[in-house]
Length: 626
Image (cartoon, rainbow, N blue to C red; front, side, top):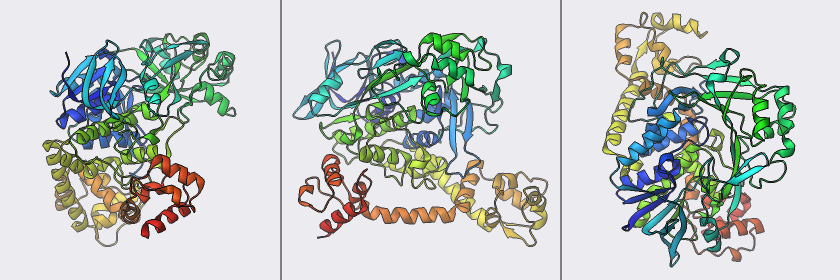
């Protein structure tokens, strides 16, 4: 019934979709196996993509030739650029999405890729021969062979759902859990553990009193996540979100259910996400706070279903609805389904290589929540990297590795492999030490050419990048050579409380002033001389904005590049795979244990392992120097 495939991808969530698409577009014959064809790319939690640092990741996936950015643009119902009050390294795009349209768009894209086949079944076992993954066994009893396997099981591995004192097996509400794989892999020598995540109730938007809610509109300037296509979302055609708050009465009502909470009664063993706690965890950890913010998020264009962001809970249903009805605007709310917690198996990611191939079994790759991460974006970026590297591995090519200085994706994978995680890992801009270089606006400049060279990014993407590079170079030259007269700009400078010009000045110098930006200067149409106006109007907004960023932050960018250069010296010092750490008696016991377990490939990697001191790295460096 089945021929041999190049790559089998298990699971069709965000990681699985990107993995299958990447491997197939690079030329591999791919089989995507999912337990339910109707839930491909399901947004299991909130109907949104992007956000702080997560938006950077989506832009990087797009720059590499992935599809998360394109799907986000096509299914967006609202767009906002977060952190605009801060520097451009912190700007993070975020889109509210139509949940059903998002999933449907992903499925259309996958079905348009000729190299992808689909099969609806559950994978129960990995076929391993001579320490290599060579296929899978499904619940229906099919033995399907492949040269590489990518596991993207999400929360389905031995998943248990909790609602109050009720608990039942499941990987998502109304969907079966996956069994067999964890048990097999632990027998093969893998270490596994448990994590927990949760989701809030969904309610009927028709039952809410929006007069009591604070409206949160989308941005007037809508940006695309994809560098390739403009978003179809228009500024004046966005759905609003809303904000409300819990209060003391809500908290008191929630506390009445704590004696039946699976978290407080110890029925949940897995660690939950620190940065996205349940409402009961918030009340317990932040007992001094009288209220917590609730985001009221629509689930799509043509549905009344509302996602109650900030109210994640696993308390009994009667407590959930009683507490919700004490929230302003929710007095008469009707619940579509209650919130719940889910605990599931994951495999500590220190057991992986940087390619996301496992160290124990050759040609077996892990991506997504199986590695201990949380979030669609974190899963999707692992998926595309696993798909790329699965294809490269079976074609006997070097792995595609992104450094910490090259991408947030590189930061994420480096963190997972060197530090591991005992709680769901979430990306933040603060995790990246080179974030001035890793802005959301320049992901294509950083990554598209690299992806094109390995055969993933299309010729169209490369041509688009080259055009942008040419335009950016011309824009930089224009800003550095165009002189602006005092009579052109002084009214504007006064309006932003900046000192007026006495003599003419280059535009690039003017942009170094706080509060002065090129978009506002270009808007002074009645003041600018004709030649100045012509010079600026030949460029797109995004090109001028990027040129401005490079001019304003040139000093910081230069310093970071110098730091990257210094650190890359450690990355070039390779540690042999068979290096014997036992003979280095000067190493600390912790460092020796970590080095033996993780087997760092370079001195740079060794220096970033949790628990390794600078003196341990110095000892390694001295020995290798000898």
